[in-house]
Length: 333
Image: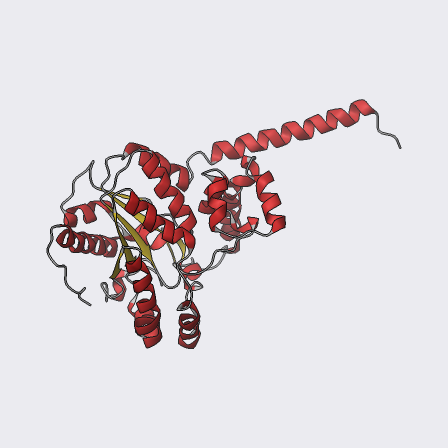
């Protein structure tokens, strides 16, 4: 049966209007996503002397007020935490570059990490570019593409998707859908352990399942260079006049005992990592043992609020000694 042209074009126009409305609504919902909120903080904090970068470990583990107290800094010339959960070195590099373009001239840049995040190659699909990684669609997208790998198919998808909020910030919608789905799934069941970052079980899945597998990965990673985005963070921060510190973040005692106390890490991978960082002119601080009380952690990776305050103040004091010309000495375990 033939469809009259008028009906066809009216239907097509209706679909286009619906998609445009959906695109506008997603843009409205995503106006204050974490990357955009962080960028707005940069605009309001151009006098910051210390920038903190990294993923959720330093996102919740670095408390600006406590660090400033330990470092002897005061706002508006204190510290600014730009770390974002679920982010890689690429997103952190883009945030550093954004801060520098806004006129921030930091005295120091701190990058917190754990396990193999500084050397693990970044290979994404467009399915991975969601949540905080969605900023790769709109903040220097062409520049950022040089620091992670996409297949030919995904590169083509990326070029289309980055022009539409409906695709670029789709995580804003899926977040609400997922929260609703989890709420339904929990009906009649005991509440799941969670914290400000999400479900504890999700972070437990990021742990290596066994010490032998972790040791094997140490051997492989000890042959890897720093990923390009991490190198660029160090080089561009130094070019801006900042001293760069890579912080091996505090980890729960079980993680330290099972993984970081293994010779393959402490005498192998860490030595490899420290040498590469020092070759860039940056400093390496092993803070993995700084918080030996398991009650300082709210899940297998993240510090509690009070634990984060203690760590941040101690890190500030440690760096203050270095800045004042006082040898900081070895970190106390």
